[in-house]
Amino acid sequence: MQILEGLDGLRRLPAGAVMSIGNFDGVHLGHRHLLRVAREICNRTAGSRIAVVTFEPHPLTVLRPSAAPPRLTPPAVKRAALAEAGVDDLVILPPGRQVLDLTAEDFWAIVRDETRPIHLIEGPDFTFGKNRAGNIDRLREWTTNSDIKLHVIDPIRVPLLNLQVVPVSSSLIRWLILHGRVRDAAICLGRAYVLVGKVVEGFRRGRTIGVPTANLDVPDQLIPADGVYVGRCKIDNHVHAAAISIGKAPTFEGEPRRQIEAHLINFDGDLYGRTMELELLDWMRDQVRFAGMDALKQQLSRDIDRAGKLSTVRNPERAIAAYS
Image 1 (tube, rainbow, N blue to C red):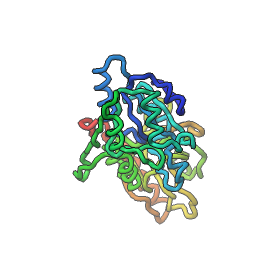
Image 2 (image 1 turned 30 degrees about the vertical axis):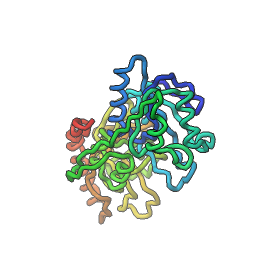
Image 3 (image 1 turned 135 degrees about the vertical axis):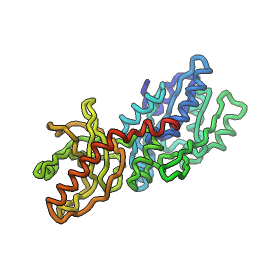
Image 4 (image 1 turned 180 degrees about the vertical axis):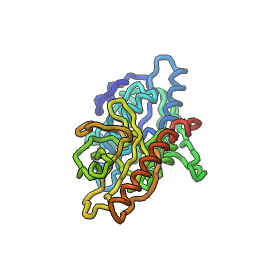
């Protein structure tokens, strides 16, 4: 996948692309359905390539930082997922004033006259340009009697575990994760939700009770609700079952901040400073304050045993294959 940056990168895209513009946070089932449509069109159009134009970070980080949604996917993960989904050319637009001050008409003029795609594929709620003044209705007007064909793709709808059928969106996935519903999030994503960060020094309390943990620093990604989760850890291309705790460890008074701690089952080694990926497969229980160390150790033993068993059967990729 070719990666280009900025408006200059947008202008350098090969003409004749099958293009989609958007944030693509999460690269979820809806995004991948849209990209499958793009691939089908490419296969019928000799010499065309799939081009995605995305914003990194989200424009709201500049326009209204307090309203900016936390990332589902760090930049490197998003790029890898887009490449896996079949994107040929990726243009990353940083949200500087040069981009944010473009009116819908000015942005469209660059796409139409300098990039010159032959197909544009978007969802029905797509907006663009300063003050989000551009939308699907305006695109329909501007592409009528032009060389660019507009395709508007309805959202994918999937059944959640409670059998409620919902349209997939990044905002829905964020809500599910914030409520600890990581299995439902996996249904919408098409894969387990993954936290990516570096292993940092913790209080080393787990080691003193025979349950060493890796403390993960995740600076710029959505953190799920407090609780204990079943997971898998990927480090150096090796995968380990894990019991994951997110929260303030209520048994230890005075813990000042939320922590992400993973106990890797049947693993013994030094992980400090290394990058780790944590797949969150299922929520097991709330954070609980225990009366003493013995009660805590007994519960941790049960958590680890359950996580080891569930991590072998919680396979989101298989469970939702029909929708991916």
